[in-house]
Image (tube, rainbow, N blue to C red; front, side, top):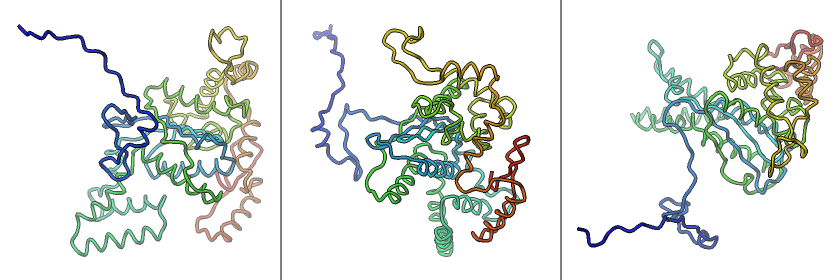
Length: 382
């Protein structure tokens, strides 16, 4: 018989470190890393081992300062789109606010996505590598790519094929990773923002927050939450009137924004005009309904929630989620207010021709119709 019977152990209590104790933490295993003693938990990203995955990511400016105006929001959107193309990430929807951003995105299966850079049977030697270098041109300059090619050729002349593979894998490792995508996007935007505004130091409050999202209902709800941010903030009364969001961009005619929202709604990518627009608009005006202080649904202890007015919701329901052509056109015109030609077809042709000559562009820009039944307007760029 055991002379020392087991005793009930007291429940373990997680150690809370004081601010001064944290300040005195020693350097960790790697240079620049803070040592975290046992019991000090750190937040980790949840990533599936294989297959595609969807995430809602969000980050806020340092101290929550309102730093972003129209130019900054547009610059962020352009960088986001470019980095998404480079990283292999697909944007479902997004919103860029004055002091933070939200993005709903899908990261594809990395192993499958990287096959595009393999040399296929019947192709010439190095065809896959050529596609990879062409892909790198989305974010790297011609000078950088020339230097990279010289470095690869130098390794090959010396018979150092292992070094060639290591160098190419350094780029491939950056694809299809949510952490690297957001990290590089934030870093690129920070450098641009600081240079434009003559400032130094960090722009963002902390590492970005992320939530892994799965299922049709969850994706649609998260997309609506993101696109309703400007309404919740009291900036607009209708989410389509906010330009720097996936929904606002889709209403303005962006095909990529429409494809992203259709995927979030689990609809065919070409179904925006048919089902996507009406279904999502009805869903937005349902999800975004404001909760007033005297509302029975408020409940005890719940706060007032700013959002869509009941009259606006009723009107959208009566229209069955459809957007009046004149309203859609007004949003599209607003999106072309920064120096892009809009007008009759012949006028846009002349402006496009002059633009091509003065900018030294090889590619000719043909006038594009805003859409049928919208007054015969043409634009230089979709």
